Image 1 (cartoon, rainbow, N blue to C red):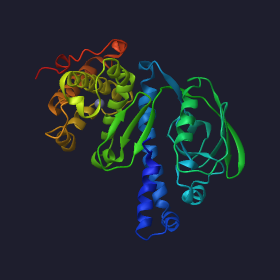
Image 2 (cartoon, rainbow, N blue to C red):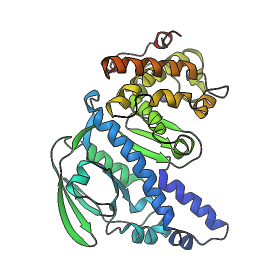
Image 3 (tube, rainbow, N blue to C red):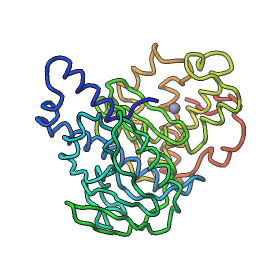
Image 4 (cartoon, rainbow, N blue to C red):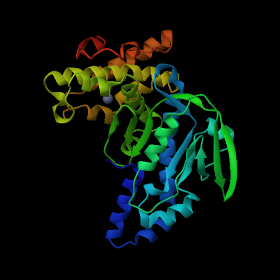
Length: 340
Ligand SMILES: [Zn+2]
């Protein structure tokens, strides 16, 4: 299993440790590192919350949108847990890392560093020893995603050791978990349940531009591209750019590019965000000679963005390809590129 953001960070810390810096000292001496995790995770959680709630009408799989970014103590290596627990004031195994501004959780009074004791009918087992793992985090997300997207959620918290109960009135949201990977490489993927994006996107693209990539990945999930690619026997990885695979992958890429512009518009992002993202030098370079032929050329992708932005300016956002998401892919990608 690929590790989440914190495991990657801790890997770096452990490498530092091997070079002579004691792990514990490294961690306790640098609370800014922990606050860096928090800020990075919350930035992605905020974009994900906005996209998932604003576009719920386009999603057939929903979850309650609450706006809490959770983290678990067992995501961190055992040797680091005392420092982590002290910094983030864990009084249990699961805690609030951050709260999205303007979200139902914020309205209900949930605060960063509250420990979650019970979330609806979901209990939290005590912290156990064991290697770093995201199993608890993923299991928690899955259990929450299965709750009613609209029913009020009673949440039992501990704040500075004092029990507190709040009721969150969730907003329906597209069922997708957002995960940040800490790597300078530009990596973004969607597997149907999750959107994963690397911190490299935030290093390379400023302001809201990374959200254009996040919206593209969410569009893949909304259009069920992963399962539809599997259904037609498309081959992932190195073979994705060859033979019949190329048509299928270009079809889903262009569909996701198209729908993403509408997802961004519904979520209130700037009207030209997708086209600015496509014209960014890093995006152009990425779709140059080293790009797999599974992905369309940046000029085609820019044409799609500009055409959809013009369409939305004239008619408002739509839901392109959503009505066809139960149909098999055809691999016919050329009609999806607007004529120059
Ligand atoms: Zn894609």
